[in-house]
Length: 358
Image 1 (cartoon, rainbow, N blue to C red):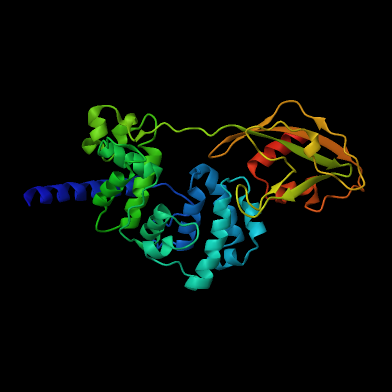
Image 2: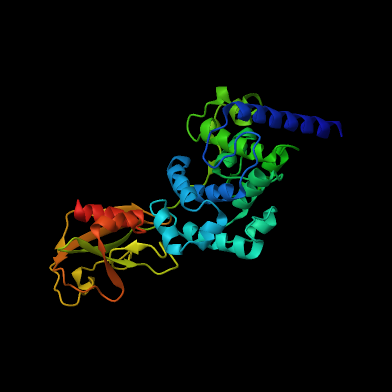
């Protein structure tokens, strides 16, 4: 009994130390409520979806634009998916944008426009997994939820010198994180852990001397904090190849089409391409056929490279110019070069167009 009491006292002290550090050093972020103010669940949810597998620096301008365009979940739910994809273009992982829109509609249709407060109800919404549900519950509603993202995983793995490799260690890290939860200020504690991992307990060269948990950190005592968390070597997917065809009309238009609504880059805009395959060996025989015009293809030097989550990609790029009266294929459309900024072009297609037009 005495041992349990001492452990509880140590954990309470850790929570107090971290919150005191957070009160002095919290980051100012556009989705974060001011100290003492009530968080907006819509902003919390929007930021958490955007931050999945993306950096804060990359997310900030997108978040600001989304909030300016759609200041409430009802406004976002009423927007056409195409507009959401356009504003999302360049942020990557486009299934998140489709799920974002689907979730907004579900909140309006099923929840009356108000986000539910429990982890279970949040996790039942489209695009909200276990971490995101816990983060929203904690930050927006001050629920005692363990929001374990990559930053928190790293902090806790070092604090306790977790010996298991990831991903097998995730269960233990979650249990340890739950043991740290304070009885009050759960939302601030969740954000404090995130900030600690983002600014002090970084992947490389952590600033241990500035950490509020410096004295109690097992990895620091060992002298090898960068060892944790221990990770299984990641296998890279096999290289895929393909060809992209950039058709320019002489009056300043380029041929685009929309990808299938589901799957990789679903619903996004692209120039016509071949299938992306490990054994690609095709050429212009797979190029789009234009009615009333014969394209003369020129292969451009070099290749466009892009790395997706599960595989790297190389695209050879062909370019052709056609007369202004050339008709687009049934599955494609002409878009003015001046209007490309308004298209939902993923980064790989932006690279292709820069390669062809630059």
